[in-house]
Amino acid sequence: MSHIFGPVPTRRLGLSLGVDLIPSKTCTYNCIYCEVGNTTCHTMDVESFIPPDEIEKELDIALKKNRPDTITLAGSGEPTLNSSIDEIIKVIRKKTDTKIALLTNGSLLWREDVLRKVLSVDIILPTLSTVFDETFTAIHRPCAGLNPNMLIKGLRDLKKSYKGSIFLEVILLSGLNDTDREIEGLKQVVMEISPDKIQLNTVIRPPSDKRAKPVNALRMDQIRNFFGERAEVVAYAHHDKNAAEYGSGGVSVVEMARRRPVRISDIATALHRTPEDTERLVKELLLKGEIIEQEHEGETFYIALTTGREI
Image 1 (cartoon, rainbow, N blue to C red):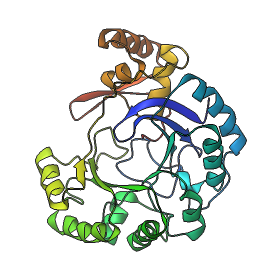
Image 2 (image 1 turned 120 degrees about the vertical axis):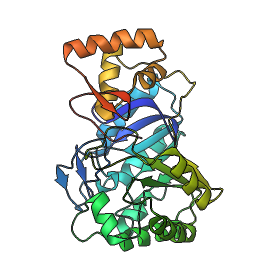
Image 3 (image 1 turned 60 degrees about the vertical axis):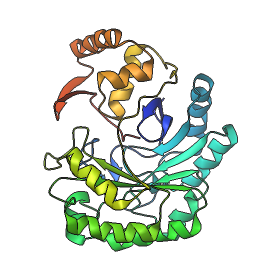
């Protein structure tokens, strides 16, 4: 299947079945922290990239094999660039009562036509990492014309119109947006938006640009305390539910590594295998050249030749 991936254990949504809505790597941003790599199609043009009936065919197959906690509209870039996103949501609703989540950078929510199309999902996870123009440009390297004020307007409009849950992600990078000035500016806006959760994140997988450095645990805890009781530091989730294998073990691992960098523990959890069995499988794939190793912050990750956005 080319548009449905997983299910995989995710840090925020449990066992999640991903729906990739756009070609790789199509985005309004070219974030320095992105684990997918550099944006190859830098655009704000909304198009019908994938017909809803293609999603429907693949979803039928996936739901026969899996019982995910959530179905996540994600992709190899920004999913709200897909003009058919509302039709795809209707297709999913017709097939299952599983909760639908939208993983978005939030850069297009200021557009009424885009906002209106996503209001029927259960959870929206937008990103807001700074309120300052210079930091916004340095971190996100956005399309010309995008600025933090537009992003903030979109989030405020979302809060007014949306009945579901908003989990606001704040991605923190050492030396860029973890200063007192940055955090104080963010808190003021975040409190106005009043999301259900404030999820503090940092670089935990290999980024597209080595200038993206993780914030240490002590500083993350300080920032969490500053934001208050709705804030949490996002960490890896290890899900107990058995994710059904799709295809052989090797195919499953390559598919996971194509979508995001993964560790031995991530693979073992997703495929319900022992660490020893997983290590043997990974070694076989390394010898075949289907995946490669990459070190990041003292941990080993495995990456396929092409990747997609993590959920």
